[in-house]
Image 1 (tube, one colour):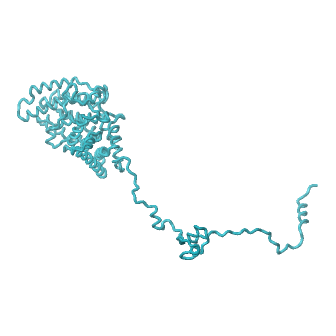
Image 2 (image 1 turned 135 degrees about the horizontal axis):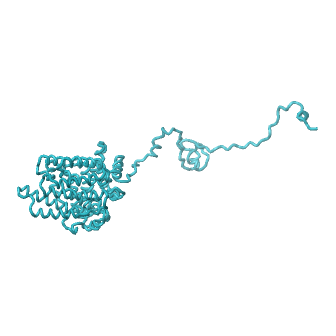
Image 3 (image 1 turned 60 degrees about the horizontal axis):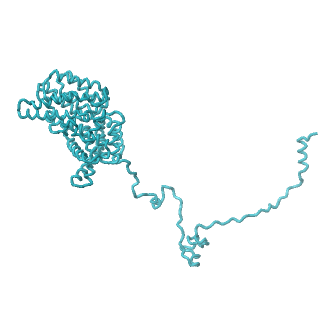
Length: 495
């Protein structure tokens, strides 16, 4: 028989002791450990170092006196304070008297506006300054890396970018910053040239280095971007001519830059002569190109090697010869001599005409660059005709302008070759006797303004409109747009 819970309960009760419990039960014996007394932290410094008991007498303890040692006194009591109420001497522990700002990575790129100028130059302005729309942009590939090592050139590029962006956003802060960069760039370049003039040999060597030459070209572009009409580009063109002349005796460490800067200068140098009475370019009279520097000859033989239309392909030597003819005709007209075009001038004009007809661009056929080259060829012939023939409408000049307009219509407003179309448009405009041709030229000016927004486009259009007024009035001086520009107080690069 199994045991039930009731049986277990009864068993427990049977084992319980009877009687009252004792009141004074002795506590179990336990060993009480002695609590070690901590070292006093109020003793003198000497006793604490010697690990001796200090009697803490003031101002010096007696224990130190008894043991004939120097009592170092007692440490200053320190009380907790919140962080904002720390003592000045403790705060000075974390203060610095020297500058804590980091240096700028690139001289000239120092503010948010500078970074805006840099982005504008890289992603927009550099694209409208060259005919190449691929990644081979000399302004980004050659000039910008050079500027990171030359503060004067970087300030020049930032002044150029600022001048271009101000035309779209006339922000006072942009203007002030652009002037800041321009003043430093000019002072740096002037100091370099001044040192060379004073005979400092080291500065003279620096004068012909790549950044100094590049800076003069950039300052010419600044005058173009700003639309200045007072001829302030002249000092920079003269400086570039002088510097490049020195470089012809001393090769650059960067041959690619040397070719680019020489071709760029020659383009603007020749084009300047088409709109000025006194600016005359380097001579291109040698048919075998011996007048060109040796480093330019080989690229001219390679298709598409030139960065500017017509320079290396030989077209500009005809433009230069036409300019010489114009000077001769202008002198005879000014002297009242008849005829204005003598036999010698006519003979030279016929030879130039034959050369223009035989000229073949080196660009790849049926490309935007090839069309632009054909337009330049067309306008060179227009330039020759307006120099030799009487200033009146004719079927020949009308057909020549129509053909030039056909080339312009092929080129879309977003083509990169728009950057070199101002002068061809200008020359076609100065030969547009037919009023029906002028709306297309106005459209071409508008497209060019929308594409590049360079400041010299509007003054060039004003000159063309003035020539149209003279044409419509039958003025036989409409051929002399250089003189017309002088009478309008307009002196600028139409490039």
